[in-house]
Length: 119
Ligand SMILES: [Zn+2]
Figure (cartoon, rainbow, N blue to C red):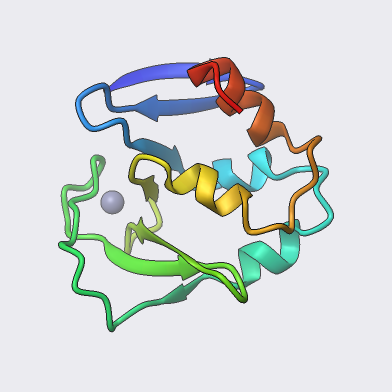
């Protein structure tokens, strides 16, 4: 994993699988200034039905829980039980942004463009 600092947030990016790790609180910072932020963060809930293989937390090395975020359409992500942070498989952070609750001025959109050169 490599660390990139963008907009005062340290992002860990796995070059092998293209996943993104956000430490606890970083998603909140990335979503700062977006009107849908609080509702989106409040929508986080455990998903017990998924068959997706659990990932291990890169910090405490314990199995993470699958959680969904979003209201009508949802994105399935991994969350550390000790609240170390959140794991996004490739594309999941972008999927989260496409849920329609975030404006184009969202910090996280700029960040993704900076990191990956795509919109
Ligand atoms: Zn952990």
